[in-house]
Amino acid sequence: MLSDLFLIRHGQPVHNPSIPYQLPPGPDLSERGRVEARQVANFLADKGIEQLLVSPFARTTQTAEVLVDVLNIPVAFTTLVQEHAPGETFEQVRARIREVLAGLADSPYRRIAIVSHGSPIRAFLLELSHDQIDLRHHVYPGGNPAPTCGIWHVTFTNQRASRFDLVFKPS
Image (cartoon, rainbow, N blue to C red; front, side, top):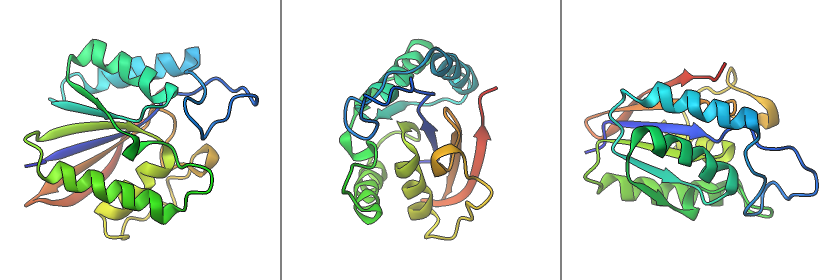
């Protein structure tokens, strides 16, 4: 039964207008993004995370590589947590997230981390809070609910999300 979910936004990507941001593979991590990922790995080192789910984009995959090096945990890549695609509605993103959450309900893991993007993280937070979470004080560049490599920690009690905290922002 899931007890803790860590929603991690990828590290800062290289800004290159010639690389489509919302289409795979998207931009790579910048050097700053790699530093942010190392900070996240250090923060999560004592959190007992058992599995990592990762969007297949370059910036999320590269963030996850740093985490795996430190945490030594199994990784699964899934398009269900990938970036909000051009032409995709937010409701379609939420439908993907509902599918992930259904899978997590059957998971043997109690503490899972997901490396994703701003829009899917927003969808997770809204789904898990039944649209009750107030994100007005959590608006970061691009309208994201977390800064690059920011971590939302969702705590579960009796199989329900009971607490939502933005627990980490890289320095």
